[in-house]
Length: 191
Image (cartoon, rainbow, N blue to C red; front, side):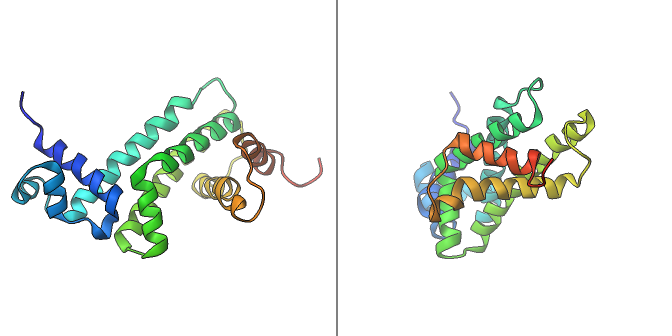
């Protein structure tokens, strides 16, 4: 059985980035984890940045699969939104690479780690944007700027699910979904 060297290198790089972060990962470490010579890595990837890009693309595809798995075309938009955002947050909290990159950006400010986190956020926003466009077409929500609305939805969700607990009593997933729905669907103005 032939060993897929490229996949072996990608998996090793993913482990290294998750363990050590972007900045501290070296091609030597990746080669050691993959059990290949450093030159073998360069037959597939030009540099660490290209290898990191490959891993980030795989991570984004995995996140999309996770979100898509909870989407139900027969369910209302806001029910799907809450379910997808919950899955995406859980995915990021459980995925070692996303956690390590977030920590590295906070602690060191490594530009490539920051770019990785921004790439994840752009992918999530792009995914939600498509769902918003579909909801507009179905008449489930009012016409709006789908990209800006996706951005606001993601930021509001993160503020409720993550940032709120740093200062106040944490909200459980049901409460986060309820508040998200209140602010985005019902609103503050009296009916």
